[in-house]
Length: 276
Image (cartoon, rainbow, N blue to C red):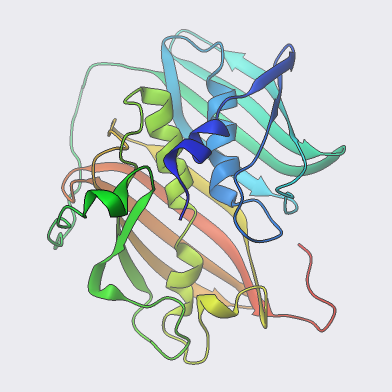
């Protein structure tokens, strides 16, 4: 499990030129950078110099996997900046090769004209407080129903609810959004696999080739990352080596604070491996 401090360290972007930054990665135990980290770093970079505005929507296309042991080069191109809205393009590269390209919409806060927020149709009970020794400094996730995503024989509907929080994280708007973006990248591939016997997360990068192709997140309302958020996932299509999933984030399992969608690759791995 990721430690809170190790993830926050990747948000500390080093300026190298105007609107250009260098950043590191948190180890995953595997050969690629966690996609959620790249989403979070994109958000942090887009937010630089945009006082009075917050990221509203982040749309990201993953061109190729990033390596955890190579610095990331992050470039921001400011397309438009108005009084209430701004748009930027953010790219993340390694060694001159593009890994991620994002379009980011930022918005100033405005008073309500109309107001409505969906609620979870049947919110599960908030998790019990874990023992301090189990939770100190680590990203906490609890899968509702104790679903074993690694077991290829544990089949179920293409739906998944997950509680998540980042205990001890700073309560500032950019960090809260970045940690939420990080979290939303993690479960939609596993959600798509659930109905299929013999297919599970434990087989990813072994006999099954998986990867996120694109990810879009829209933030509706602020929510502290240190508090419990319920991520409600559903996959509505899988086929032709791809899957499509949608998700919503509810603060405390109640009011909607963010929505996200994701295109993924899920296919049998060729004998020589697979590359996006």
